[in-house]
Amino acid sequence: MHFAALRTWLRRGHPGPPEASDADVPPDAASAEPGGDVPAMPDSAATPEPAAAPTWPASRLAVAEELWGSGFLNPGGADEVLRLATPIGLSAASTLLLLGVGAGGPAQALATERGIWVAGFEADPELAVLAARRIQRAGDALAKRATVAPWDPAAPRFRPRLANHALGLDAIRDAPPAPALAAIAGALRPHGHIVLSETVTTEPLDPDDPAIAMWCRLEGRRPCLPEPEAVTRGLSRLGFDVRVVEDISARHMRLAVLGWRHFVRLMARERPDHERAAAVVEQAELWTRRIRLMHSGRIRLMRWHAIGPATPLVAEGEAQGPRA
Image 1 (cartoon, rainbow, N blue to C red):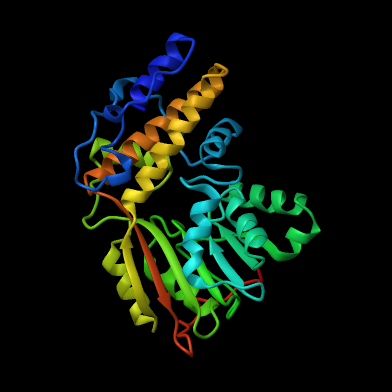
Image 2 (cartoon, one colour):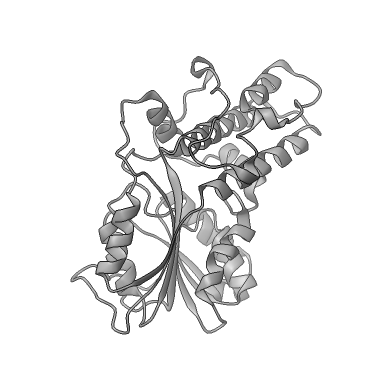
């Protein structure tokens, strides 16, 4: 549906949400391609001011989890995380270095559905605490197989040879990719697989551009996204055989639109209170802006799959730190 119509419904007290139509969403999400036409953006003057710093209050977290699933903060939820992990060939004996645990869903899904050991890390301190608490409360069986700790993408430190393989879920964000890639490489055992999904840009983003500035504020990030070539080159320099470099933007947008359509149908059953309505509007604005930037090709979501060497390279001081 068109997110501007969603905001109007929330404010005017209509008995039900507006119907979705193909004209109201990015050109058929199933065939959406970056660079295509997109609907007009909502009037920015009506946009609520987001928090000055990244934060996950209960209202915002609740909306995100209703959209994507309990513990998940991105489109596709558990199914998408499991799909991204499939090329790694995980077994019950595998240990996975998981970057981007979010609210705990990815770690729980991988440990439960794949039966693997998960050493999870999350850059947002609030989310790291929440994810760790949820895993502990889920029972001893899960707590033995999954752990969560905070990490700093700009100054990453992991225990050497901590895991067999690694999965990154848009975890590097606005940090330079080289330190994170070196730390991941040092944390893997010989022939370890790496699968990364990252929001990237092929040209530097202008921080003074209102569209970029508002999107960054809503997502709680800086306009310093990595370039795809930098990630590919970084993996190659560390001795990895880069097998796949794929633009998954169209799939990402399709999953986002499908999640919102389902969410709107659920909202028809009960009108939200003011706090919840404000959180919904903020998330709608965030995804409107993200999808528009992705359609224009200014940002993309890319996936890498690479296989490590028999003797991984370890940059001095990079892959150190406490056990996850």
